[in-house]
Amino acid sequence: MRHWQMGALMIRVCIEVDRGTHPPTTLSVRAESILRALEVAGEQNPGCALNVVFPLDPDTFFVRDAPEGVGAEVAA
Image 1 (cartoon, one colour):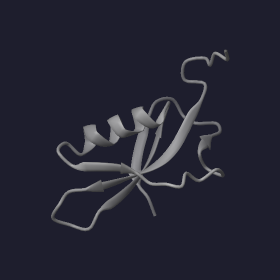
Image 2 (cartoon, helix red, strand yellow):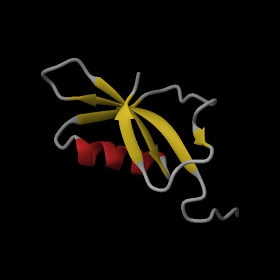
Image 3 (cartoon, helix red, strand yellow):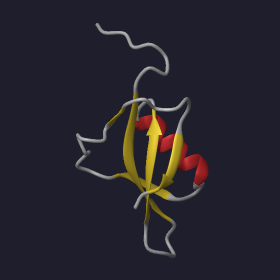
């Protein structure tokens, strides 16, 4: 079993946020796991439907030299 240091590994996934009245918005979320990325998106968008965008991008999935903590921004 491999153990990771807390905060040593960060990922980036795109989360689609559907507010029901507008076209969905896509967020790029940096977090420790896909589950945590969904939690972050949900905290910023309470009551909205959230979906992980697949397929995951292997070139950007693992974040190198990530600043501390989680973050979310509107994807370009």
